[in-house]
Image (cartoon, helix red, strand yellow):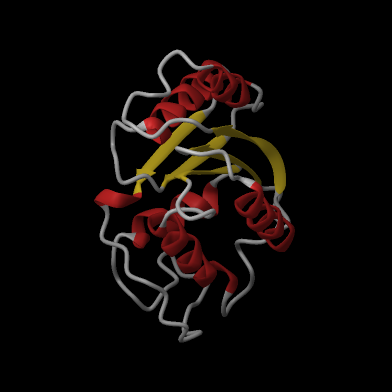
Length: 183
């Protein structure tokens, strides 16, 4: 049975190395019959969480703020898999994706928790100039534990500072295979 996959792409570069991983993953996932929806977060108007605890998970757009997260909430609620794609910035995810993750909290508020559990899975795609992924993997593992999502794995592509550095590297095939394995 096909899965609904949402990709939150936290790269600021639409044609960068993270986006190349996303493209390969998407090709693999679609070849397996899955539906993929990508949100390129850098091109969206998403504000930081206010910490107001005013959200209501049962609403179509659960947050009190009205911005482009209103496009993401319904897709995440309907998803089977959420893929976090981001470059590595100072041993963590980019600000773009961290902001979106923080805002997903509105799906946990008010009328019932529509984010945690629900049979959802996740994968992590990352590109970086270096190879210091330990801290971000610790964060990702804790996030998966909190959300009660199954961790499908990750593709970590170090040594990719300039746009296009990832071309021809094995991590692109790994991303394709990770996407193709989702059934």
